[in-house]
Image (cartoon, rainbow, N blue to C red; front, side, top):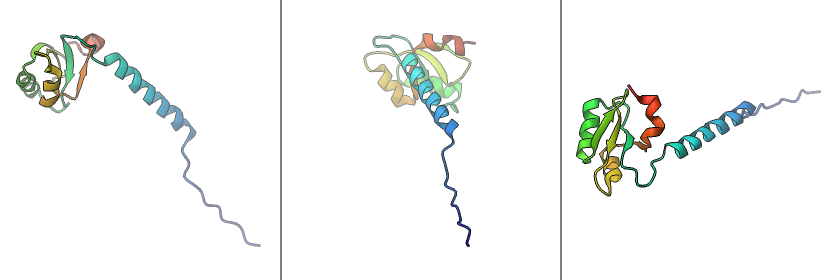
Length: 110
């Protein structure tokens, strides 16, 4: 009698389902709470993390945004975009993310 060979299949660990659900819910809650509200005059903007202070300031200035304050991270600034399409100009200048500054104030203040 020959022994049957079993082929082990790669299985997704059960705990990975819960971890994926946790990450997805965290991202959804963060996206909803950090988004910029319509009509907001002041926003927090995140530039690429490898940018220094000078490069972030130059990018904000090129988009005609007034710098309201800096944060502990040089690539995260609180700015006042100028005009109707200020956020669009900031995105063209290199902004990755625009957020409500009150939602992140406690986390990034100096």
